[in-house]
Image (tube, rainbow, N blue to C red; front, side, top):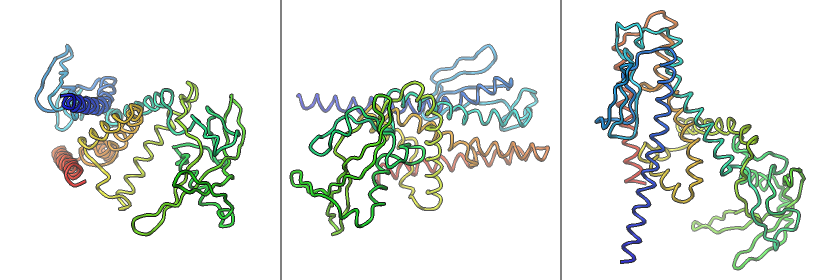
Amino acid sequence: MISLLADFASVMTTIGYIVLAILVLLVMITIHEFGHYTFGKIFKFKIDEFSIGFGKALFKKTLKSGEVFSIRLIPLGGYCAFAGEDEDDADPRAFNNQAPWKRLIVQFGGVFFNFVSAVIFAFILLIAFGYDVPQISGVDNRYQDSTIQTNDIIREMDGVKIDFVTGDTANVLLQNHYNSMTDEEKANYTTLTIGDHEYKQYNNLSLTIERDGQLQEVMVNFFVETVANEDGTTTESLMVGFSTVPYKHNFVESLARCVPLAAGFAWQVLVFLWQLLTGAVGLDQIGGPFTTISTIAEYSQVNIANLFVFLPFIAANLAIFNILPIPALDGSRMVFTTIEWIRGKPINRKVEGYIHFGGLIVLFALVIIVDIYHFFFL
């Protein structure tokens, strides 16, 4: 009975995190659509409906302006429907009767709101949980001397600032430090045995730490363990004699770093897309909404702080993805609007509608295929 109750509790907990993940994705999409809605209202476009979700309407309310606000059955999307967006409409407030520059701003509104939300979420992440800057949480005095102390903030390694945006994380810089050592330097080590493990101990790692508001440079030990792989090769594993936690930035620091951090997340999305196009990463590395939901749920169960890492990343991801010139996405619609602005007349509305509809079908098919691949073949 106790085992059954424990299993039931575990299942319910997992379901709870899945629901949380769905709500996170829904909030992100709603923010995007609200960006279109906000700029549409600013420029007095005629808006037919603002919907949270797709499919059958669970709730509908018609506002005095004639706009319909709805909540629909499938919580994996949403839309802001403008009158005359995909067809001609005689109403002067209709989307396609507005000046191209106004339409471009409205089309860009979703991306803009996603990025602004990424900045806000990055601020919350930095001030509440920290992210890339390590703070020493414990020192094993058997392997490190008193040059470092608990609560020291590690700002630099070998004179390079620790910063996710530039790719210079603590792990990367430690690996770079070891790779830059000469053969003579690598041969100058002392042997350290811990249980059944034998390590090479070096004392040439330079850290710039912040202690009580003051910066100082210290030299610390790091260790290398040679691990044998099943295929007969060996791998060198690096470690240090202290533990760290992400440093929680103060208000001013968080305010100063939230925009660069959000931009860093956006840049990582662009880098990934380039790697996907060049074949550096495979299709198994991408996923649709169900893969995203399962990933958020999985990581949130490990540590709630992981959820707050996902928030700015997903927001930045949506911003970058929607600005791409792919049919049905905002980027493609902006391309058509720009062409119309330059030509002085639009491309045939029906042709544009067919292109966007075709793009939407291809996108839906792609996300379904990659989700099926993730769930059944990985």
